[in-house]
Image (tube, rainbow, N blue to C red; front, side, top):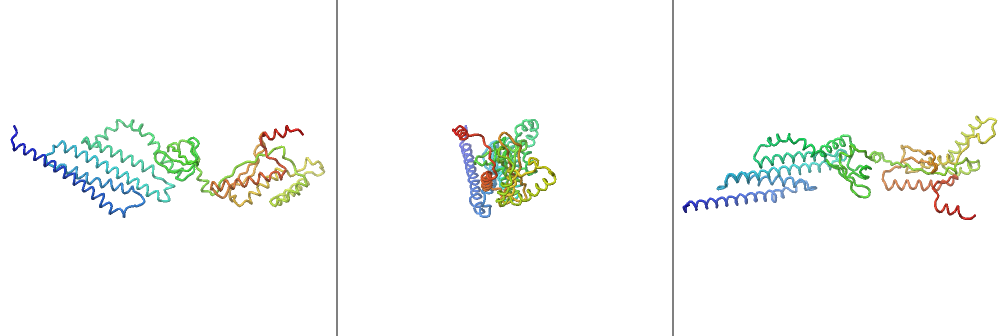
Length: 403
């Protein structure tokens, strides 16, 4: 049987252990409180107020101090078995590893935020590379965490990774592909935040709002968000409208489809009548002089009109459209300007207008384009030409109406 002295000694030891644990806990909590709620609050005005990321990074670092107190202080608390001391020390050291890793991750995030405030960040985003760095940090922390908990060297765990390399490559296949794609996109300047891209295979048509390691987010013009895997932007085709935006002009490429039955030569009276168009005076004078000289040289002794060169209503219309576009104040200078005929078809004769506005703003561009074609559609009858369209119910009704 235990003597009274032995029982008293055991109870005294347990009391010392309990008091030691309570004191260690209170000490760790007190240090944690002083660091986070006194020192950090006092230092808050000197930190970056435009973000909370730096606060979180410093907060994780501050957590390391009370954990170190517990990890080292547990060895001076009397009456605790060594196995329990080892378990507590290992667990607290594991939390230290997690805290340091999270502090580094938050620090990397803050570095990206600082970089995105620079003008060059739109041309050279580094978010994807920093995400790779985060993955490396977290993987390293996981290895160290496991080694601390089992009490073995991290090198032992690393030596065992060789056997599962193939599995890791399979698991991180998308990450590796995305990393390579991010390098290509950044190095070749293929994509920037703010670019308008169009990718039909992914139903994406809008502005790039975020470029990360695994995904690129595109806000479509209907305000929906399309998420594209980064590697798809390298393996699949997409259209980037940045060149249009940087040029300062946006292309108009649209056709007026004319009824081929309305195309004909102009007689002298009609040519004289067309001189009322200020934009055609120079063209008509030069063209009539050119045709008169040609006819005088090539048709000596000829009197058949079919062999002579004559003005046509469609050619005069093309000249008018060119003059109108050159006069228009919102058509950009220095860009290609064409008015051309496309091959005739059963649907009529297309006259294509190809030019550029002096703005890339979508709303303004559509207004300029509409104004131009409003005018051209209205002026076509002045040249005795007709637009072509498929017969409608009204056309059939007019044809069947008794004369």
